[in-house]
Length: 65
Image 1 (tube, rainbow, N blue to C red):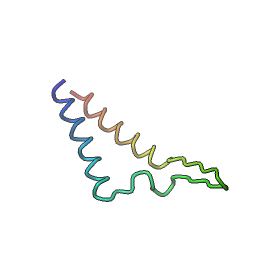
Image 2 (cartoon, rainbow, N blue to C red):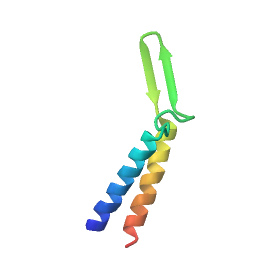
Image 3 (cartoon, helix red, strand yellow):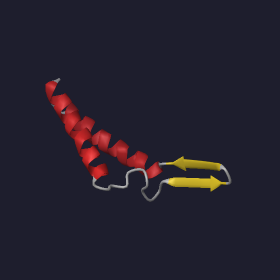
């Protein structure tokens, strides 16, 4: 349990550092924005895929113990 918490903490810290350094998470190519008058719709497709891949890799490494 302790190793898992350390890894999760490091991942959160790495994502926070990347965002603070200017990684455009949430504004990647492939994220769709639709604006029409007072209506706007945002669908972060590429960001969702990237987050899914990263979480899959992290859980795969944690499950290999």
